Length: 491
Image (cartoon, rainbow, N blue to C red):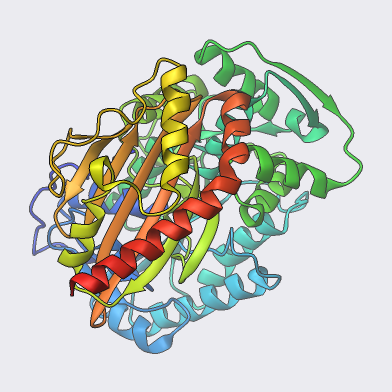
């Protein structure tokens, strides 16, 4: 679960042109920036929430707060920029007007680039025959490409289908459906042909684009295989040593497919909808010119799959589909992150970060748990009955923690003073679980985010999560309220 830090970047060449990256908090943008730094480029990022990039090891990157639809912030962000990456879209936003919003944003960005004399816009869009689209989102991606070129600024548009990489939405949908269901009765769209491409190859195309400053137009990019979604799921199962049976059938209402994906995978309904809708459209490279212009030689699906699984096994996922989603407001919610189910609770605390961190570090052991302590003890007895560790380990020190310390049936996995505490469960359960506390300054106080993560293994793990949810909704809200009260009492 530890996010991988970007590799050590080379020093940026002050003589190189300035490059703007929009969507740097997103799945692709968050991985592209360190690649550009490694190549020595000067980089500026435009983000609505630049504070969400504060933990990235991106030396020398300029951060500008703003929005691609706001002319004032665009003027500041584009000043002195030679080329700009446009990696913004509304996929996953549960809004009926996403298509019009995407188009308006692209037009505003194109006009601002023309005024700022930007030499070229580099855009990552969606693959597919525009005359045969059955998906509003795929159609929108191609409309955005046309809008970006409407003011005369040259545009280099890459069009890709399913991106295979640890943390990508399409990959996580395939991964979780295959992992959890030994027998799948699926809609007919699983037989739709697709040309998936590895995320490393997508990033290689985007980075190499800067080496071809005169190239513009549309380039379709895809991996080394053309497969159906059914073949992709079976290949995943074979790679993981799983036996799976897939039975396609007619599904009378498309929404049933969306609801099934929402239930069986971490992908939320707003994102599952466009993914399922897009899966009914064949997305295959029809024009292979990209192989003549660029040096990238895309991997096969199985090669990209092996790399994605390796990143997951090494706990080295850099970004995920959830990276660009809006942060959680005050309150509680269910959701997902990095392919995991989660229950998140957030509160503003009228205390300094060090006080909040202090009370979080005092959980467990002789101090007990501040909400439903008897439920924690009961869960410990159940774990011992299954020959697990239970609650008997306690803790080394009543108030202090260090990485590796046991805390009842948890173990400290990560600790950053006054900012982060992450505990990893060592209970006997069909999956992996974490309890994480993130603490950051907010106004005159502190924002405390408490998240319980669970990565289920198979259907039993999924059933376990939903079975314990009623207890979570009692224990975890009570815990964060108690932590808030204790921290404010310390102050």
